[in-house]
Length: 223
Ligand code: NI
Image (tube, rainbow, N blue to C red; front, side, top):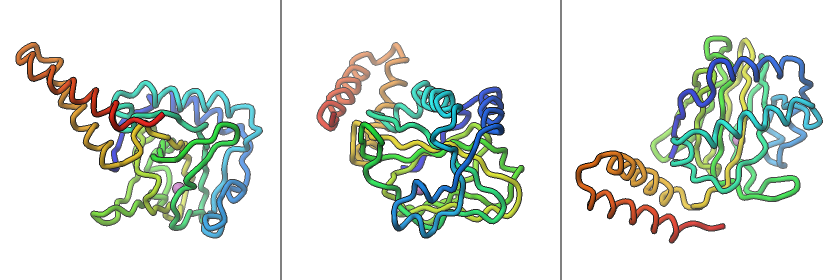
């Protein structure tokens, strides 16, 4: 499932993140790429030793945990330390799938990839995130502060930036539920459950749906 999460960060939060990044050092993105990805990756990433990295990580991961839409769709078990990527004119990232297992200390499986857009779409040309899905190619270029989540197993690329500068935050999530089809069922059932529980009519039906949701989550969760 490819899902957009509008306004994950407020305009003020985006401004303070971008301000912190304006003083930070970036390095060649190929340093963090796997063998295949390194051949197609042309971007820059926030230096891992940068002192702003921890502050940014807390802001971005905190925003994900606060979002009911993200929590319902991703069912997060672990969220990676975010990475910040910068694409200047002429930079792009060719077709690749993300690494299956990541993490420096504690390792985690990447089930879901998250892109948090930090630059206003009108401030750069090109730079769409292009994701191949079973329904064809989806081209995603969202407002500053908006995010998109998609299965880490999907083939994707970043189209060349032909003007301006594209800044994004990137995270990977190990979900409680590994299978994307099961996650999608739980997401839709969870939405129905919330509506039914908010409605004081039809208590019995709400309780059936609630129990089904909770027990399916228990059946399919891996810790
Ligand atoms: Ni990727």
